[in-house]
Amino acid sequence: MQATIVTIPGDGIGVDVVAEGVKVLQAVAQKYGHTFTFENHLIGGCAIDAMGDPLPASTLDACQRADAVLLGAVGGPKWDDPTAKVRPEQGLLGLRKGLALYANLRPVQIFPQLRDASPLRPERLDGVDLVVVRELTGGLYFGPRKEATPDDDSAYDTMVYSGDEVRRIARKAFELARLRRKKVTSVDKANVLAASRLWRRVVVEIAAEYPDVTLEHMLVDSAAMHLMRRPADFDVIVTENMFGDILTDEASMLAGSMGMLASASLGEGKNGVYEPIHGSAPDIAGKGIANPLATILSAAMLLRYSLGLNEEAAAVEKAVADVVAAGYRTRDIYTDGTKLTHTKEMGSLICQRL
Ligand code: IPM
Ligand code: MG
Image (cartoon, rainbow, N blue to C red; front, side, top):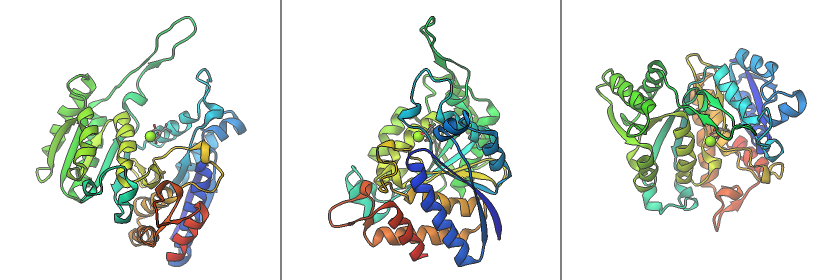
């Protein structure tokens, strides 16, 4: 098949890891006889530097026309001035909103050989296999807000949801659960927040369309605790934008590192943005030591969800599992007796396995 893939490395280690994702996609194209055309674009801090805009129109436009987007990360100390008019993160949020990618899928899988990389006791990790379905274009990130100013020392952000926004993300979660262990945990803060009470009522309404799927509700504070206490009990977790942001950083510790978790941001069509859940890690940027596996696993999701190439996606995932099983580790998942591996070498090992 022919496909146009937009690559947006962004800032920091985004550059290091996207290069490896592209390498793997090129290896897939070669092996399976596909033609992937890559188009590189700017987002975040580097786009502010080059064009004064964290999401240049040319980037959004290219993404809209593409079959899929592979993204790295945004942000860094250079653009962290709290009084700045534009921030790198606005680029990423604008892209998600601009492409109407309201569903962010973040799978948490455990590679058996990485059990020792997790701060949790290994036996806690037995049977862990969950997906967080994070609502991505609403909630606290996108509600009306006010910045503090020198003369007005107050600020607010607002969590706003419409019933329809909850309906469509709930449906995604239930559809996904049907393909898995048929359990949905809806995470909210309905004991305090009005937006969460709406969320809960609508999720219950949608659940009636899926009688074969079990629904449970959990308050977000309690969910944060149970994720550590009994992570294997979760199947699909569906939740508000910011709750999902927080819970997935926490959940990455089950997998051993932020460097292991991939994500797919999807809307109604086939197009999507695929990115690791980790940030730009400016402290290790350009040193060649970042873990590219989350990005490579995101590339596998790209093959599956945007291009419909299931066999190729599974082959990439298998190659990652094989390389991990063979003992290769970037610094973040290194444990005694394993082989310390650099970013590029890790990408090449995956390509070789393919
Ligand atoms: C993520 C990141 C982003 C988010 C930041 C960089 C805006 O933390 O994708 O999880 O909060 O969504
Ligand atoms: Mg995050």
